[in-house]
Length: 393
Image (cartoon, rainbow, N blue to C red; front, side):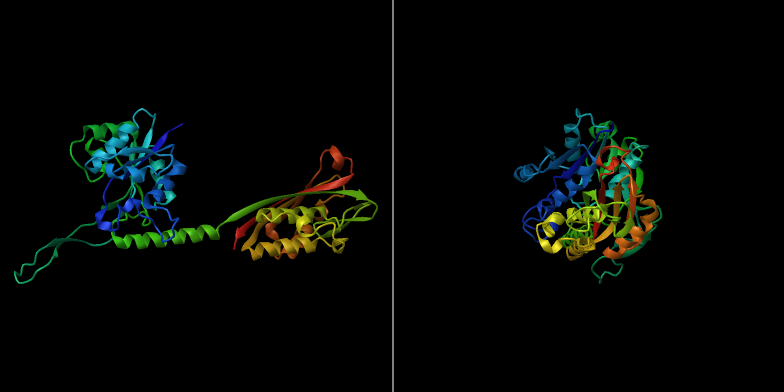
């Protein structure tokens, strides 16, 4: 398998950003537990790489030691020297590809990282960028000696121009050799790579992948963190499973998923013994981490003797809505030899959907046999399994 490393460059001083410490060690957000800039940057790469190297300023060793599961490397006098130090630390680690990233681009979206990695499958170098869309001016002094300040001295053609971002990704051996051969500083690693014959493909950048440089950038970053947190909360999905069994006894019908089905025997239970609805109810409680039917409706309580199971299901879905969730979809499987469920499946779906107040397309009911094995195969009872998926509404 391809082994990929992320090299996070965090050795700068970042004085333009203000604050009592370099920007990469400042927190985003006002809460005490808020993550630092560098924490966000590292977290963005964790799902995509096998190793993370952080190149830090030698004076920041105490701060850097608070980072977990990373390799720490003291940086050099220039950015190029810092990157070279990080690459050297990875030389004998079997790394195939490396992503070199500025810690100050802390909120890089995952799709930008994936875009670079995809391009590296066919190229030795790739980096994200955004096409320049604004007019470009060249600045100069006024021709009028009485006027002071900076004035527009001309325009430049913006066609073919891009705003460079990171991570800048490379085949590891190629970029290590390029940095070893490079003398002096460079604007970025793409400049180093191109100077030594590595072609660099341009991938799609993102406005969210901005570099925290000035004090105002912290406010922009804070707002983006809040937005992402809210979106994550809104998209929270919970899954729950339910399982129930009821034995057969005397009777002439069974209740299954809210439908009365004629049969030579009835299911026995404290309530109406609707095994399918019980399993679904427990699946919802499970998704909410709120126990099971027995905790909410104890069988020792005589008021629930012979109760209709829709009471339990309505309570479960109501509790879900109180907690801010809606039913995304659910699936009930009935395990029995008889009665045959197929002719009643559509009615069962409709009944469950009506009880929960959801679209019938979100409800699945199906059946299977146990091939004449076990208590269901011997027609001693019916079992049911259910899964419920809830989404934050």
